[in-house]
Amino acid sequence: MKYKKLIFYLLIFIAIGDTLSNIGNAGFNDESFTPLSFIVKYLALSIIIYFSSKSNWNEDIPTIISLLLKLFLVWNIFTIIRGAFFAIDYWDWKFLLLSSLLFFLIPMAFFLGNNFYLVRLILKYILKYFFTFGFLIIPLAIVTNRELYSRLMIPISVFILLIPYLKPKWRKLILFIAVVSILIVIDFRSNIIKTSISLLILSLYYFRRYVLQSWIKVIHILIFALPLLILYLGVSGQYNIFVETSQNNSYTIKAQKGDLGNEDLAADTRTFLYVEVLTSLAKNGTLLMGEGASGKYKTDYFDTFADHRGRYGSEVGFLNVLLYSGIIGVVIYFLILFFASYFAINNSNNFLCKMLGLLIAGRWLLFFIEEFTSFDLNTLFTWLVIGLVCTREFRMMNERDMKLFFNVL
Image (cartoon, rainbow, N blue to C red):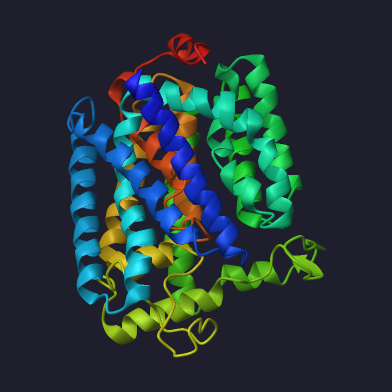
């Protein structure tokens, strides 16, 4: 009973914090938002830490994953300490305590994924309460931030892959929410991409008799190699995929986020971010270790404080992790995603693990496009899935075992 309440509170606290952040980002700030956000986020983090302390770090987890996770958490804590050391004013400390510190500690949600009882509780609460009654948040989203509903429903990209294993009523609900989350804000590109990737991966399940394991292995490698190749070509000036896609104006729609007229879904809103962050880090000589968890980058486009102090991160996950924890942090994160998805795809007896492995690989791809470095439901479920597929018992289940596992929802 105690665990049920804690998991329920965890989801509620993160959802409230996520709601306050999204409403605040849309300009609807209130002086009570900061203390309330601080309280609910740290209560959520405390619950995650509590469950992590109850977990056996090496239980049923591949040795390489265990080592990488420990290294990642140590490096993240070191990044937080460096951020505190370099923090000089209220804004630095506010960003550190309300944003980056929380983000760098949420990987401990990995241990929630190792516990089948907790996983089923989370999935049950999301389906029974969050998805079922989430429509009530739509009016608030319309008058504040139209992305609010879609961002709160972001776990839908994971649940889409569970469709073959769930009861019919949940399948219908998941598909309905996926459609609504897109239609309510059609110019929310990353949501469209995440949902599309999940639906594409799901399609493999229904054609699994014709899909060779070798094909999935090749796709897995290509997904991890592609962003690195594109990044190299972009930095070297040989090819810029953002510029190339922006030249196609066939994806223009009427903008829904404010009175902005038409919006091009293929518009290049990333190149200048890469240029600014990479230039700033190179100039400061901090590419290897980053600027710490309170780090900023020099920007000509976003001078929030009108004093050229810099900007606390961008809209691209890769650039933010690089900014705060450097190449070292990015490499460790890459290795965790790669090996977690590798074990899911290559060392499993069920097709769901293979699909989840591709989903994790897809997170690496999206890491170079968006994937906000936030303490939110999206990041929570990313680490939950990583923890789940790294559990040997889950990977060893066959299709029948897997359907029984989810039949209790």
